[in-house]
Image (cartoon, rainbow, N blue to C red; front, side, top):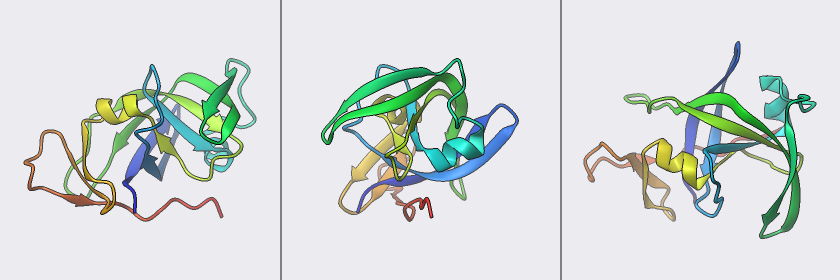
Length: 142
């Protein structure tokens, strides 16, 4: 299992909820949310806007071409009984991604604490250590 969270993504007038994977191996200098093309279309970021930055990310699977929209959205984690503060993120669009990925920097800004990756257990930093939340089911692009 992994840790997946329900996120509310607000880009201009568009608001979408999606399940995103916490990826501690996704190191970034800024809070970033990497999203698949299907979600980028819903948010109005596909085809890539003219002000997006084309870049190549080095990944475990090799080079990955992406488009970065600086400050492209505000995101928050939403649960039944709590939600995080909103965080301004760079939206990173990947043609190869099959689900949204939360970068290490974004996980920190959202105040997330992963208690057990194998069991999919997590909590917000302000919650008691015994308050464990369960991972959401994976996002699907189908």
